Figure (cartoon, rainbow, N blue to C red):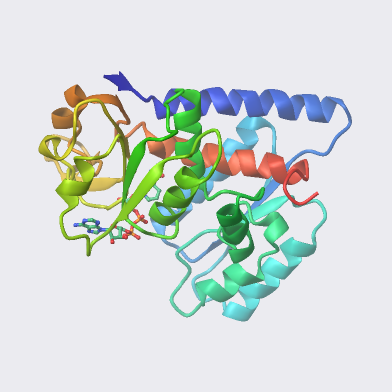
Length: 293
Ligand code: NAD
């Protein structure tokens, strides 16, 4: 079994981005600039945004945080989006989700200029991804693709079972892995809550991407010898021995499955750390006008 160390890989990629950014600046180029919009006072969202801004500083990007209260109107959010779309210094921006309930997330998403949509959630980027055209890939799937690439895990001709069909993880993963590309060419089965016999599907899998949101749901009896397991789940389980009263576990029973697997990601320290790295990679692409010219 080989552990896929997402934390170490994320640090390596961040160093590469920092080196490239320094070279760009030295050559008189533009400093990549990411903006983040945070509406309301959801503590988890505040932590995510703070980490994104910190990561920008670490690699030499400029960052701007636009923070407004929970009572901000939809029209005000749309005005912020318009302003960021039009600001020539901002290469890309994200609107942290979830937004307060009175704001229509779809409307906000559609208002973002696809050229600056470094979260890759705009239908233009989703459509381009589906067609195999250059696009900003959504952060978590992009991070997983990087892991498979850098660990040189063979995907061509393999049977991949994706568990979960969300728009941010499962569905884009199924599309990316079935594309004709260096990391791709898989035969993909996309499973979800209505799948009749999940175990029958996972037992046939060479690669499993678990994005369900249920602690230790995928167990050793559900996988075959030599399987590659990418565990996207982040679940809190009570743990009185921890100071904070809980610990984080994935969707796969790591201890049970590890010995049977050829590669496996831990939780924490697996897919999670790669997510911010993806955002930085997309921002660098935006700054270099790599996707839309
Ligand atoms: P979601 O709740 O939007 O989707 C869950 C999916 O699981 C659904 O499509 C559902 O059909 C499927 N599902 C539910 N029960 C099932 C069952 N019994 N059998 C088969 N499929 C079942 O979740 P999401 O946003 O895709 O996130 C999934 C997990 O990944 C969560 O734990 C989330 O916290 C985590 N996550 C982690 C990262 C990261 O950076 N590591 C990023 C995004 C999400």
